[in-house]
Length: 83
Image 1 (spheres, helix red, strand yellow):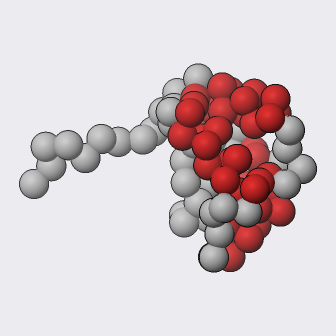
Image 2: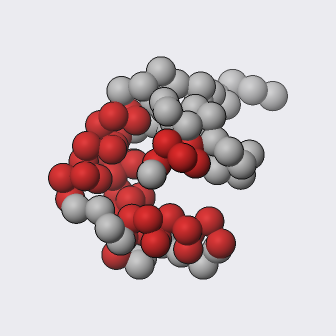
């Protein structure tokens, strides 16, 4: 289900407001998914969508998704040093 919205490597979201996941820290992805699943992150339409998807995930599935997206090439950019 993740690739339906974020793209196969997590770098092609179908909506520009959806984050790119490829190359993101795996612990950040895992923590975010756990928060969505447990109802501790929400309040927006996107959060509601993620919450409904994450409720179905086991701890192992969260770890697997986090590991997969964390190992993908990244298009994330560090803004350090930008003026």
